[in-house]
Structure formats: structure tokens, C-alpha cells
Length: 134
Image (cartoon, rainbow, N blue to C red; front, side, top):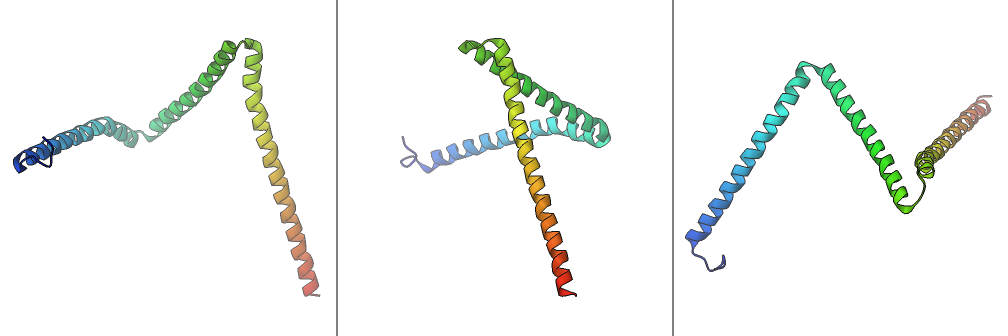
């Protein structure tokens, strides 16, 4: 029986059942989130410095774990292809350093160009000032 041909009583009963299920799941989500979040918020209010250190340690641990996973994954994938471990370790370490060095060189060039533009504009301003106020 489709929803269009059903009597009004059945449609209302299905709608009420659906609303009760949605409200129950909403209540469970609110309770669980409050049970999980309230102690964390309370601890951060009571001991902010310790909470900050814990968050920093978790972030650094996650970042280090990500890099270790990345290195191990690359070494394993290179090893599956048949590339020796020594070359894969060298490639895993040298390639990111090469990109980092390229980025630093680009940043240095941008800084030098910005300084040159600043110096040119400053000296131009001084020359214009001298020309106007002779």
C-alpha cells in the first residue's frame, strides 16, 4: 500500500513514529555530546595551562605520527615496486627538503623584491619632495 492510498490514520501513525525516532536520536546525541564535552570544558576552565599543554602534546604527537606514517608508507610502496630501501629513504627525505628549499628561495626572492620596491618608492618620494620644495 502506498502512502497516497493509505488512510489518514496510518499516515499520522507513521509520521508520529518517525518523529519519535528522530526526537529519541536527538536526545541520545545531546546526552552523549554533553557527557563527552562537559568534563573537557570543565577541565579547561579549572586548569587552562595544563589543558593547553595536553592539546599541544596531542597536536604534536598527531603531526609526528602523520609524518612517520607518510615515511613508512612511502618506503613500503617503493619496496613493493622493487626500489631498494636505501634509495627510497633518500628519496623520501630529499624530495620534501628540495620542495621546502624551493619555497624558501621563492619567499626570499619576494622579500628582496619587496624591499627593492620600498627603497625605490622611498627614494622617489624624497626626490619628488626635493624637487617640489626647492
